[in-house]
Image: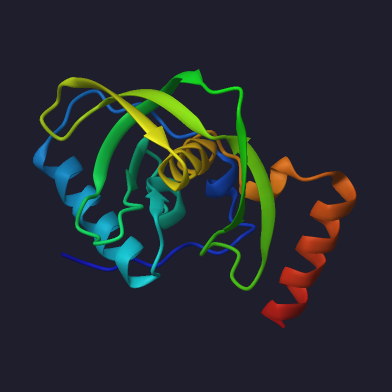
Length: 165
């Protein structure tokens, strides 16, 4: 398939909530494959379709040690989140060169349409859970830095602009 270009912040498509996917077609499967290729090329542990300029509620996540275990999701929705939290350094290829420590629930249960077009339900823990939540934020028009205080967010965005040149 193809490695796609991640659109740069502050492209407005990154702030636009993605549209739901009605059915899993060959076109949707091809987008997922491009997303996996793009995620592997970064390398990263997840990617949401809006990051490559596709306004659909599609995400891929692969936090496995061996890779090649990508979970393909359409319309992912968190049904349950643990009360126990986990902190992790998060970043985005849409805003290269900066990252921030973000606290999120350690485990989540997610419902989504799988690559067979069936409603699936899966539990994610640790880095998998962090990545799924990060991708769902992208699908809702949010980026990781939106979870920071205004002061930290402003500092991070200033640093990103300096790096951009």
